[in-house]
Image (cartoon, rainbow, N blue to C red; front, side, top):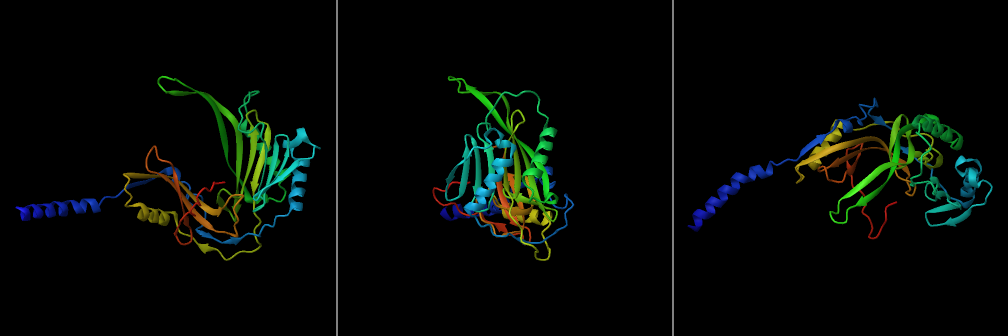
Length: 320
């Protein structure tokens, strides 16, 4: 009886094994994701790698830039003529007058100016806000405040709205409700183009901030200097090739489905606190495992298709 029972188990396992091995997750690329492919943007599948000119921080250059900002920017008009207090950390130097803060990164020279009294704070609106007018103000502000930025390398990307809402919760049912959320801030975001190719990632961006009423309240900038000259343009993988690489990488994931709703192509730049010696093209794919899944982002080398493993976080580290 034991032999017969063992034989039956082996037969059952043999029948089930092909079904287990043939399991494949359903992977969907949305139209929104595919619209980000370089072919859809009319970009040639070639790109040159570039190097950045190393940034050398000195207190003198930071003081000079802070002097320009506090003298010329309309954001600081209410405190014009007042001498800022200066504090310094390992990462940056900060100039402050009341609620006006100007930060300069020691790593990249990236800067941010904000009126903290009016940032991320809901305030009564004086009337309807015309976003076209704000866009014109942002364009003019960039031309006047960042004269070293080549207009040919600048492209408007999108307007982001920071929303503010108060909520209430029923103490018995524990059900919460949000009361008519409203805009707290408008952020107009501009991205950099290098030889017509956009820069993706958190670096090489200019942001112009407005209050809920449409008043200019700040800016941020990360804009590294490129070394003159570059290597000859080299071919990059097509978006279809990257899709196949993604399918091979995730084809045996245990999830039932994967929904890829983001696909970005371009030069990749780090944020204001991270050093970067060179810039080269990558693909970034964003996906979820379901409606309640947090979106995951993966980066692939556009030249080779290699998956770029994210750096491991040190215990107790805080993302900037």
